[in-house]
Length: 441
Ligand SMILES: [Zn+2]
Image (cartoon, rainbow, N blue to C red; front, side, top):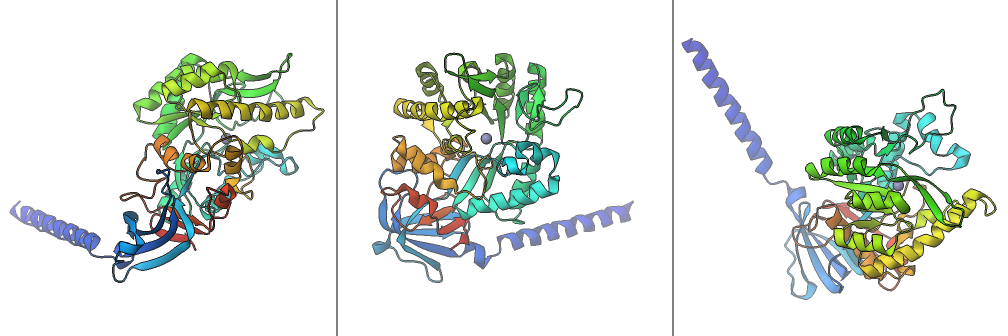
């Protein structure tokens, strides 16, 4: 008995010593991580301020921004790694709030959307998703809100873990996993009714199933919940855009209630009409696409603080032939989107930058959305904020990302020219730092 007590004490002592050594190891200086990096910024657009600053020194320690000061009065610490961006415009890492890393365009020649689910092994889709993530980072997008895997299950959670673990390069990911719609509310569809086809989302019917799906997805790592509030769309009898509503108000309310209980938010795909109205009445946090919104709906968004992620570019791509019903629908959708964007902008709706990449092939430039926003009346500075501090605010990480400020993560990019005079400069990102590490220079 005594012997066992003695052994136990020895054991405990050994464990404590080991723990102390481990702690000591953790707090011991790691030169690469703790040394200062100093960026000389010719012009700094910090993501929050309306006025750019010139000739600034951004001091970075580890993975955080330590300080920002005038180059003339700053003494760079001895031994600091100096990065000269004195001829460039420096900005916070960009945020795309609507992507699909598991989609690779939906080229009909390659089998369209359905081939993703029916033909591609999950390992192939995952391998390609790692390439998508890398492409985003190369273009200066250091954060993505990735809005569902399109039949690739919880693959986004795995990719996020791989990036965070340092196994593959990629942006910070906010993931939604499977997404939710109703029976008749998502592909695969159009197959023989005798067949039970896999779906690109988790299908629910009724508030109980809706809440359960949200619980499952949150339990398995969803940072946000994504819901499809409209599905098919077509041109109505009077030439109007009609979109088929999916979830009932009771169903969406159950999902929003559950998700908010977890301290998380709900993104709602909604084109217009009753589906969009249910999204707003149900308390959705962000409206995705929002092709056509009435003045009353826009006012409701302002009142409720609903975010708007318009994804303009994708609706200008791959129109069906003009003389087909689908082609007429495609043209009508694009023609309504612009005026809605302008109205929302004027009313003060909180607009974030989002592209629907994945719906757009990942070989295309992500920054193509910026000139679309500016053409529709948004100032270049506002468009930059939509892809930096405003998006960070939506993601509940204000001050952490989307801003070049003391205490923020060192996610920093640079472009050669002045994006306030030429917004297409944002498509020419030549320097990318994420989490204090240079990824592209
Ligand atoms: Zn999408």
